[in-house]
Image (cartoon, helix red, strand yellow):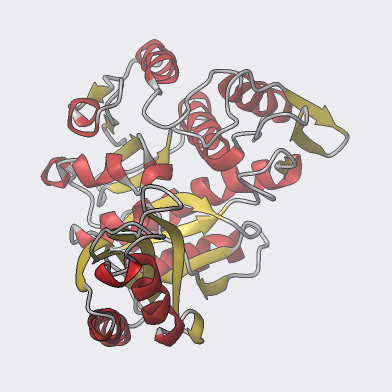
Length: 377
């Protein structure tokens, strides 16, 4: 059913077209042409204008051949750096990068899979429900494309994102709520050698606060981190400002709320003990996911795995994906493991067998979705 060499060729071609976040235009245009060749009508939204990129999200609605509930499949078009001039190398049973860039299996393996799935559906005259494909931009920069998409356009009531680590069979049903936190301390400048006592050192105040604040692994569901610190103007000036950028995540929204409140209270209190003034800005980056194991979207994925000989593995993750935004829009959505390994590094690779299994899994999900709708296959 899956044409191995054709699938490899699809994937190799896709990764050769650069699409670093917010510079997906060439790749988007290629996808548009490919789906138009297949008789479909890809629609581009204005996400590029909203986020300051050169391409929008692509949304494709595919009429079904059977009366059944629509299904949404999603993947992202962008890659991280270094992502210019990618050349994929077929090395025995794997496909890897040539060694000086990422491979881009995150997430172009998913796009190659969905293209192959549609080609198989047409060639073999298989039954399928109405399908919707969503290819987003700037996922790697904080799910910006998905956040800008109008989900009222989607008719599906269940969705599958193909963007998780782990082998095919991994079904991510839990992911964290995520807050971005920016801490700022305002001190008072003074000459460091002539009258330091007239200054208030913002860096020292920030250090005092950081020393009292929790950091790292808080519990099995919760983490926080301080990732960037900057401040001061010169070595001989008492620093009048210091900024820290951090984050907190948890699979429990209550835990995240409590931790975020604790971080804010400690930071402000400790900075003030040094005579400084502190501000804390909190932004929710994306909502968490906590799907019921018995929900339709999960059970269909499990049945599909079993159908093609995979052992379903219901799991959670500490990272976000477009599945977070899709769930937040009210559409139950799981994130599927597709076998990409060592992502975001020049050692990234994917097994050819996993690519093939990904295609088989999506086809099986489509078949099980028809059965769940009560239609005959």
